[in-house]
Length: 259
Image (cartoon, rainbow, N blue to C red; front, side):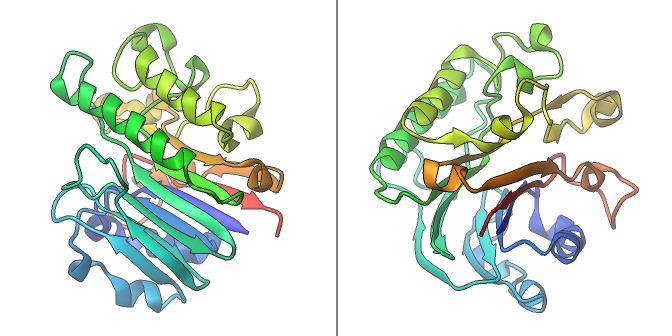
């Protein structure tokens, strides 16, 4: 089984690239974040033409998540109990091929001193409470977490120390998810090697300078983690010359599991 998670930063702008990713990698499940369209504007026909169904939880111009699959998509849930910002489309869950998939787009937080940062911490607390009550051994929680779990996930830990995306309170929230029985598949695959990074800011030539962060995560319970074969990042998809139109500032994360 192959699962991809990808913050597309607008499905409309990235549609040709998404179709290219589907064609090249032929994933079974795709979790998208920041689709930035209402459900009735999601490009369902184009996705279906490649053999994929879709469950969407959209929002015009902001946020938005979707799960695509080549298998039946069942038990779809949008949002989650206790969400501090329920008006924002940030979480969708579904069962595909025996796996319960929760696709998340975590609140960014902006800056540590910004009120949005406290919202982010509260949102992660609420997410953890909800996930801990999901009684499915075949659970995957994936998406754009807007948190680097450790210094291994930052190109320059000293420069990022204490900042949003790398602060201790955010990382503590991710550790609580791991302590609750989830495994970070990307870190498992990489071991003690830095990265692999999944996000590079559009500014200051960050991608070409290697100024990356690993904020796109795939967390899984033991039954799924035991099936792990590999985790790779399609860095070519972040290159302006690799596809049609401007790339997202995130690259797709590709997880292969034993069937």
